[in-house]
Image 1 (spheres, rainbow, N blue to C red):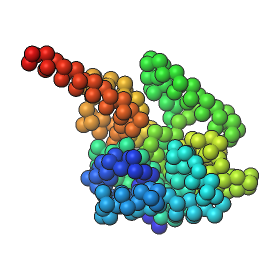
Image 2 (image 1 turned 60 degrees about the horizontal axis):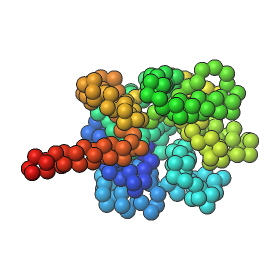
Image 3 (image 1 turned 120 degrees about the vertical axis):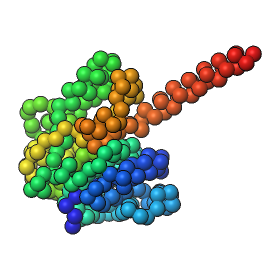
Image 4 (image 1 turned 135 degrees about the horizontal axis):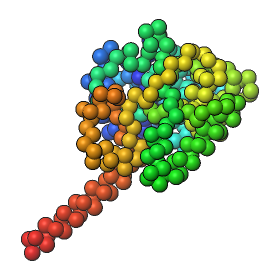
Length: 290
């Protein structure tokens, strides 16, 4: 079993983003960490034909779910994608492929070389993404994004109550995150003792990174070694615009981060903006020619 691997959960709509992500892993993976990409069975041939077999270990979501006999495949298949993908990530540890994993999303990519030491301490303990998300909350406040601010506060309070923890509101994301099998095992054992499982838990409270983080704080399966986010995450197009306006480049970001996340949810907004600009330019050229 490896000390640590990279896991990406993807699906057909994120194929091209997954291509970019995998290329960045190949380019910057200096210690040769294995890359696993999990996709639905029906998407496997599509991904393999586009990305090939070299340097990628392919998994099917359904095989990961079947690794836990307590999960009902029919119930899993009926879930919406934003819920089911969280369950696949949370159950990856059952495949016994590594003691730890770096869980990365398709809309992320590395921008500088990385090593095992970026994820594991010298004694092999994985770092844990843990912070209070104050800069992002400030951004939401100044840009009037109140729904995100309220969602974050509700999520944190929800998870604190579940685990009986008093104290600050912690974020255990953005992805990529670093996860230990021991934490997931401890959580699974507790859920089983309560007559539940991770699928039921995530369906009720769909915050997979918080399930991991709060379980670590509760059960202390591994030493807590907090770490700030390892990728710069642009969750809103306005964040990206602001940094571009201020002259921020990926070369500059690489001083502080291993990579960047261009949130797939704002790609349509960006495309609409580019289409509007292209239309305006076309109209101007037509007027000029006339």
